[in-house]
Structure formats: C-alpha cells, structure tokens
Length: 502
Ligand code: PLP
Image 1: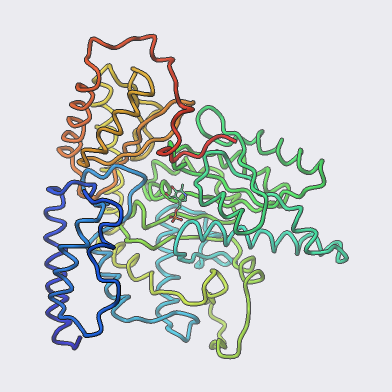
Image 2: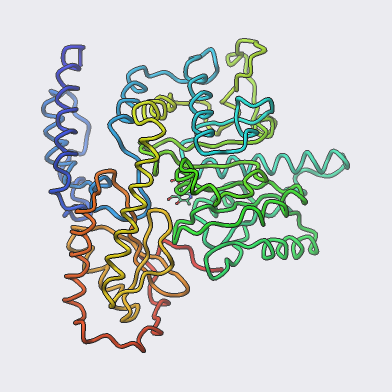
C-alpha cells in the first residue's frame, strides 16, 4: 500500500466506522452466527498475491462484521463498559501512525514524558493523594499497563520482592526461596478472576476471604486471616482490595483494610478497574476513603472513561519497589543520564516494549475536558437510576442490591428459575445483552450502562423488551409472594460471572 492508497483506504475506513456508529442501533447487539462460521468462510492460507484494499474492506464488512458482538451498541449492558470514543480512536491512530516503541526515554522521549504528564493529570482528576503522582517530591508515579490483570500481577511480584528484602535486611541468612513459599496473598471472594489468576501466575497462595452480606471484605476478616496464617508460620505479603467488584460493584472499606496492612508491612493494592473513573466526580470520592494506605492503585481508563482498550492506569507510591524487583540491564538499553525525574518505564512493567498509549488518554482528556468526562459519568449513573426506577415500577421485580455506579441488579420475585429463563430468552433474541451474577445466594441479572451512545429512550426500549418477555413468561396474576424465598442457585453454573464463595 503506497501513500495514495493509504489516503483513500483510510478515508473509506473512517467513513465506514462513522456509518457503523451512526447505525449500530439498528443491529442486534449479539451476532447470529454459529461457532466456526468465520473459519469456514476464510481460506486456509494467507493470500500469495497482494489484494486490493477494497477487497479487504469488503471482506471485513461482509464476513467479519456479522460475527461481531457490538460492545458499543446502546443495548449492550453486559460485563462492564469498554471505552470507545472518536477522540480515543484519533489518539490510537496517531500512536499506530508513528509506530514507535518507548523502551527507554531515548527510544522516544515524548512517549515517556506524555505518559508522565497524562498520568499526573489523571491522578489529580481522581483526587489521588499526591504521593502517588510523579509531580510530587517523593518516589511515587503513574504508569500505563495493558490491563488491570497485568497491574495486579506486577504489584504482587513487587510485593514479593519487597517482603524478601525487608525480611533479609534483619536476617540475611534467610533463604529467599524458602521464604517465598510462605508468602500469602488475600482478597475477597468477590474479586475479579484476574486477581485470583495473579496468585497463580505469581506463585503465591491467594486466599479469597468471605465478604460480608453486602459483598465487602471487612477489616476484622482480614485481621483474623493474618493471625491464622502467622500462627502457622506463614507470612502475609499482599492484599488486593476491590473498589467496585465485578459482580455487584461493592466497595471494600479501605480505611479498615489499610491500617491492618500497614501495621504488618503488607502491600495493599487497590483494584478499582471499573468504578474509580467515577472519582473524577468529587461526590464519589468518599468511596476510596483510606486510599492513602495503599501501595498501588489501578483503574482502567479503557473501561468507563471513553479511552479505547488498552489503557490501564496504575499508580505506585514508591516506584523503587518496582525498579528493585524488575530492573534487568543490557548495554543496548543504556539511557541518557539526567537529574530530571524521568521514569525508566521498562522497569515498571512486564514487557520490554511499550506502545505510545498515553496519546489516546491525552486526546480524550483534551477533547472532552474534565467537565465533559464528569458529565459522561454522571449521565451514565443517572441512566442506571432511571432503569432501576422502571424496574421498581413493576411489582414482579426486585432491584437488589441498591444500584451502584452504572450497574443495576434485578430479579423476578417469582424465583431464580424464572429469572434465569428470562435472561436466556432475552439473550436468544439478541436485541439486548446482559449477564448474571449471584447476590446473597440469589440469581440476579446485571444491567450495566455501557455504551456512550445509550440514551433514556434506549433504556426505555430495553425495559420494554424485558417487560414483554416477562409477560410471556409469567402473567401478572401468577405472582406468588412465598416464592420470594425459592432459590435454585446451585443449579446455575455457566453464566455466573461472580466468583463463588470459597
Ligand atoms: N478488576 C475488575 C473489578 C474488573 O471488573 C475487571 C474486568 O472487568 C478486571 C479487574 C480485569 O480487567 P482487565 O481486563 O483490564 O485485566
């Protein structure tokens, strides 16, 4: 492809995408394809001869697009949002257009420095304590990881290294390898699967502690777990607190967990992948009370903040904890020597190579402005409250627990089997996409405001679909108040995205 063809193809692609977004509303949110559909449609081998860009775009439109789940459809209400905006697409385009890798400062100074600047902007917007920011006097700073999963693993590995260093400082004869087998990590049984996986990947036993009836990990539960383990000669090393759990968006009380971790020199990592974006609105910051006790904090700008995947913003209070753990030198990676406070980001992450991800965070923050981003968050929370109001207006339904951020969980009074059937029937129609989780041993459907394109009218259309399907399933006179206590939750395995209590 030469410059002329790139110009034509790029223009056509942008036009196609604009048309897609303007009309995504008219497509079913779920595709109507069978497993293996695309493998049958495409040739087994890559083409020997170059193909015209028009053929490529035609294939994309006719073969690939029909197999896409439309995450940005106004009727996508599953999981949590994936960020997407024109401003972010422009940032990504610039990043791909430049095609640089920011291994070191010298490998592309702007790549490192724009990340420092945007992570300072973002951290300030969230109201994070200054110690987490690169612009403070201390060793704190922000870095963009590919995913919250990576951030949680990076923090676990750094915690492990730090604990070994701390313990061997007073007792240098201790065997590092034996020590590591005694380390224990803790989180709640409501944690995202990625947190449990960090324990697997980082070879550290991860205890999923019982949350309280509201899905929160309480201080007394953590303290008891520490004591149990210490009595057995084990060493508490790492805690992941959840701000906005994946199932019901519950918030662990950092002000309870933090002091307990600090007292034992245990690393406290905060997984706020979805919900922390709301902290750009000061009225929600009380939910991170106690954040000053944390060692690290992650929020996915690529979830709720209109930045396209991947842009997982992670801050640490002491970057040397990462550097000591991950610094591996090579002559070809020698960087410019400077007294300026410039991070060598390759020591802050798992891969060596790093994309110019800050460009999309920058274009979004500049093109929306802080006010525009706050308006987006508040609008989405208001849409969730509107949906909850509609559900509550129908006495066949219960909204439970209380809506949290952009998430509303609801179920039929008529028992778990019918709630499950309702979700199955709606999913089969493909016009609306939601998933389920459990709350207090009941099967609940999660309705999340995801797309920036969702309006009040879309919410009402979705509600009418839910109501219509419910009418077919149960008639209004069939409600049996006693059935509220019927739970057949044990039979529901496959669609539950909320980790089971252990
Ligand atoms: N933590 C929470 C609370 C989440 O909801 C999710 C994903 O939905 C994750 C972590 C994993 O995020 P990522 O896909 O960026 O690893």
